[in-house]
Length: 204
Image (cartoon, rainbow, N blue to C red; front, top):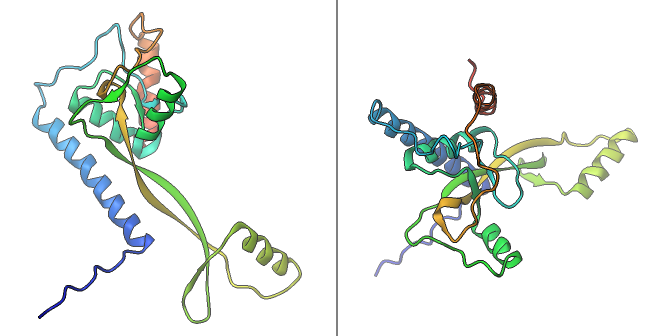
């Protein structure tokens, strides 16, 4: 009788690589979806409620880089008229701070996976294995090097891990945004486009 072999546990590098591949593929799918509807697409927001850069609804911080591009494309493809996004945990915190509101993610709503960068620091030991370093260990090695001691080279690498966010329009009972009383001026639209290009990292 054969026994199933336990699945091999993935290391953090495999996870990071797969997360990045999935992210790139999802962006490509959104772009293909837009290409297929070229000439038929209608803007999902009104001139009186202009959609700006995607930002976190609870912290007010704008998303940048590839995450910004992913959220902008997702908004266009899905017809979202909101530029506010949040994780499920952030929604829970917002609910806790506003107990008078009844909020919940709409049934069947799917979140968007984004990338969270994490820098790791390590040395390669004599046997070829990697030793991940804590801040304390980094300081110790730096002190030894300053004293003239021979220490391994400290190396750094950025890995990526996923986190999921939901658009405010997917949350039932989420309060409306204040201050949306007029459309963008030509100057504001130009500034918006310039910021979008800058954050996307695409040379123009």
